[in-house]
Amino acid sequence: MSEGFVSRAFRGRRRNPELEGRLPPGQYATPDFPVLSAGPTPRTPLDRWDFSLMGEVDGARRWSWQEFGALPSETVTRDIHCVTKWSKFDTTWRGVSVDTLLAGVETAADHVVAFCDGGYTTNLPLEDVTDGKAWIAYEYEGEALAPEHGGPARLLVPHLYFWKSAKWVRGLELVSEDRPGFWETLGYHNYGDPFQEQRYQGD
Amino acid sequence: MTKDDADRRLDGNAAGGLLAEVFRVEMTTVETACAGCGARAPVGELLRYGHEMGAILRCATCDTAVIRVARTRDRHWLDLRGARVLRLDGTPL
Ligand SMILES: [Zn+2]
Figure 1 (cartoon, rainbow over the protein chains, first blue to last red):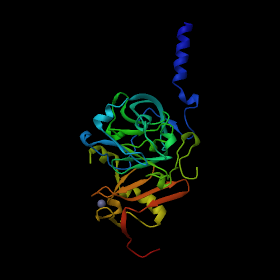
Figure 2: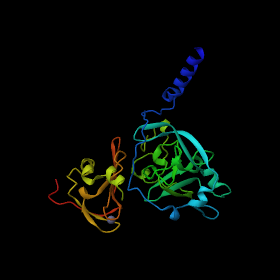
Figure 3: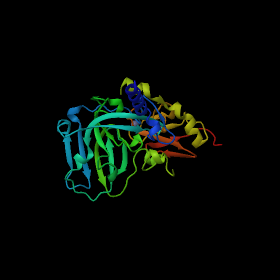
Figure 4: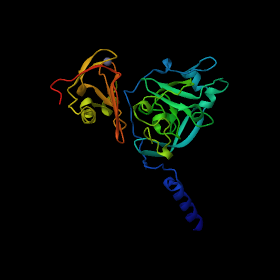
């Protein structure tokens, strides 16, 4: 009896991440996965998909879909937070760590710009996509990432608002001068830390 | 273009209120010329994406973002790079 009580209580705690400080200010938790797109869903065939590292690097790098799939992958479970105020706990993704892509790359850049099919861009400090903080994700909950959620692959940077996790990503450009992206040039915060509630410029 | 997209987007009339906050005139009948392909269309016939973060009004011919507008707290942000010209008819207020 006491064992049952303990395990129920334990599960109960695990099921209330809001009580563990995991819900940023101004957010609500949802089991749904709303879709928010700034444009039509691109449908790039996989045999024409590639991923590029360019900009201030010692030689650009490019992976075909097949080569990308052969890179070491990681499965990570993270909370995600959208600036439109929904948060979703314990989402599981599989993809390639940006650290893996940058291994051996020499650069003086401090920032990256993620670029995407459809023309979307978003900017991040280089240090926010390295040291195990960002992935190029191609699976969600064990399935190929659906096009409306950014498939075939999206950037995943779960510690920042989710507009930074660019859908349909095709590469990273390393830059010395920060270059604000699609939403960052339309009044949204340049960095976007959900726990600081950095939604808009001036926050 | 897919059915999914058609389900998720609206036409430019859905951005009429937000644009009127900026221009203080009825905007859905204003004619635009797309900077990408030159296509002319009233704002109301552009395709509206990005519903909650702001209005991204795209050309129905080439998908160029003709007008981007967002409201952040007490500010509006307007990007007209994708519009070659706007034609506002009638007598100014
Ligand atoms: Zn056009």
